[in-house]
Image 1 (cartoon, rainbow, N blue to C red):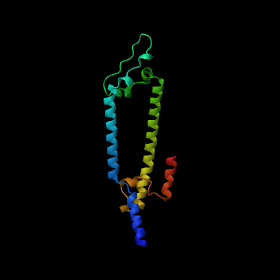
Image 2 (cartoon, rainbow, N blue to C red):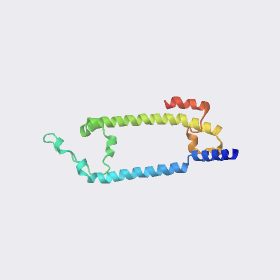
Image 3 (cartoon, one colour):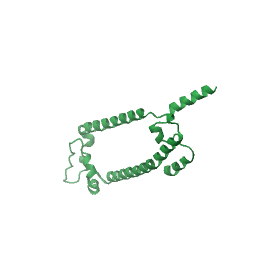
Image 4 (cartoon, one colour):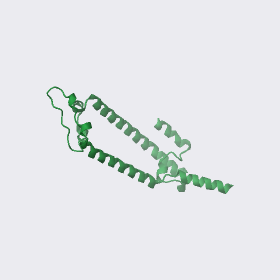
Length: 160
């Protein structure tokens, strides 16, 4: 009976391991899909004039609508465009949305940096001290998976 239980524990621990090769292949695959999506969008966008050409019915008086630039990477100057110019060109709603996205980006970046800077070292130290070297790998050492005891007290305030 004891042999069966040990076999079950070994199988369970093997299933719980994170394979670094699997994570690396997933990151590579998702990066490839992301780049392909951006390339396809930039190829199809200039050909779809109905959606992306300026709306003639919204022009004011004698002013002619602004012509849409033809380069496929025309969104990149947006990084250096000042907010008053954005409000003039794309409208207040879009400029406010871009401001909200910038705020969310900085907020989540700060939270992620704080969380990683505090929790990953705690998890690694616990794994080096308390987990059998055969039962851990590089990725599982950085997670909360095997952490127990007083080391978990740091996770609660950082998570909040």
